[in-house]
Length: 103
Image (tube, rainbow, N blue to C red; front, side):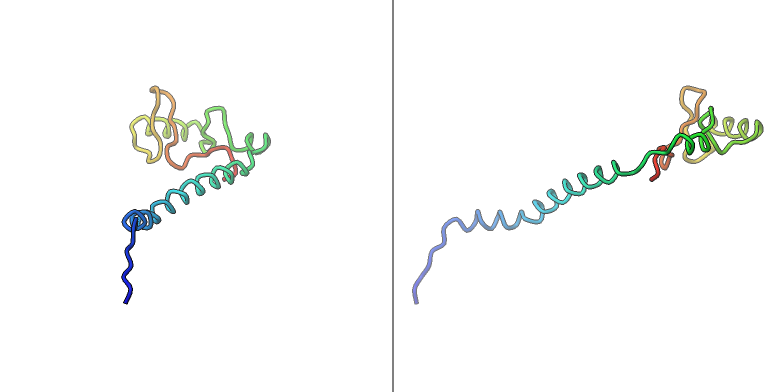
């Protein structure tokens, strides 16, 4: 029976073992590109839509002075999940905040 010698097999074996990582890296790059592409396709709110959901204070769900007073006082104290107080005057939504796009 003839004998065969293989040269460079260890290098080939290393490259083959790295294939899953190469594939994962390529997939991550592709997913980021498609995500940015799709996000760019989300339409902006029209001026009329913005006017109906935005108030001068930036918080459209507060209709009365009493609601606004309660909200701002509790945001200042940190009692409202998803809102933080910035610069001692303005609450800011964290997490799933409105982006002013239809997403």
